[in-house]
Length: 174
Image 1 (cartoon, helix red, strand yellow):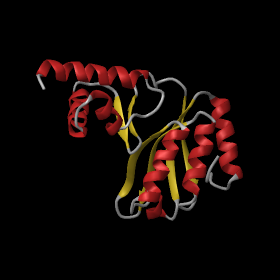
Image 2 (tube, helix red, strand yellow; image 1 turned 180 degrees about the horizontal axis):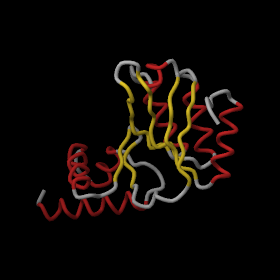
Image 3 (cartoon, helix red, strand yellow; image 1 turned 30 degrees about the vertical axis):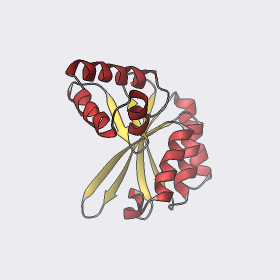
Image 4 (spheres, helix red, strand yellow; image 1 turned 180 degrees about the vertical axis):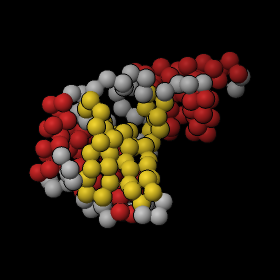
């Protein structure tokens, strides 16, 4: 593939991500654009190096350019492995985006991973990986204790999400 077509493909990737209301997997992009999954990985590295605000997670790639509005907060939670889905579903039901997960490991200190869970489909993808692979959530390292950095559309949505998490017994602090 020529450099010109690579540039055009990367422009199309940015366009697709900007239009998207959900994460788009590398496999979806490779199928849509007719290239290998590795070509998409390479394109993402080039785009990020050029300063494009693209986040990646197990759920796929997401454009972060317009996501500076809203209310940002840190939620401290505790639950077992089975609580993962319920926690994420509560948050996205209130329009709250789960940006990452952080655990305070006794040996390694703060360990953080991007999540970028914004929609019910993102929750589904996360749970599919959790159930179909031999992986554990980071919170298994700390007895279920973890924090999430989140973005809510407004204080009302954040307050409602906090209340629901508290009712489930997941919220550690208000």
